[in-house]
Amino acid sequence: MSSLQVGDKAPSFNTTAVGGIYGAGTSLNLTDLKGQDVVLYFYPKDDTPGCTTQACGIRDEWQAIQSTGAALFGVSIDPVKSHEKFITKFDLPFPLLSDANKSIVEAYGVWVEKSMYGKKYMGTERTTFVIDSKGKIAAIFPKVKPAEHAGLVLKALKELK
Image (cartoon, rainbow, N blue to C red; front, side):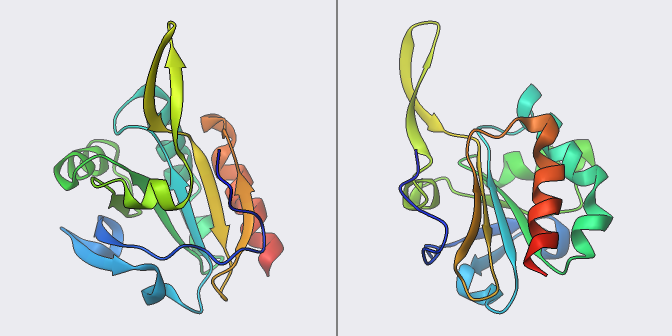
């Protein structure tokens, strides 16, 4: 569980963004987005049932999300090639961030011990952070339900205006 709280300065990062306006891959730092509201949604794995539901929900609400002026990024530890396939397969209009070295999931406190069928392992906890134009965390949605995610994000972005 993230130790970050609403009002905290959002941890910076440097990684590769693919898809959306970033095309085949561009280096991106959170400071590049200063002055803009930002959504970082962390998800466990490309092209899995829950993650696909979540991504397609955002895709289906993309015009409304874009109309808020915010930048939105999906973040997982999958490599760039996996992100490219996921974007193409589901026609995702927004960029995904590759966090293969786990620096972003660790900085945001979402790299956690999980359990499935009695077996413990480390993985990404599905969590969303809304960051305001000043770089402060404005909202945190822990353990997001994939089907409800897009609506929560849109509501939070509208409340920032």
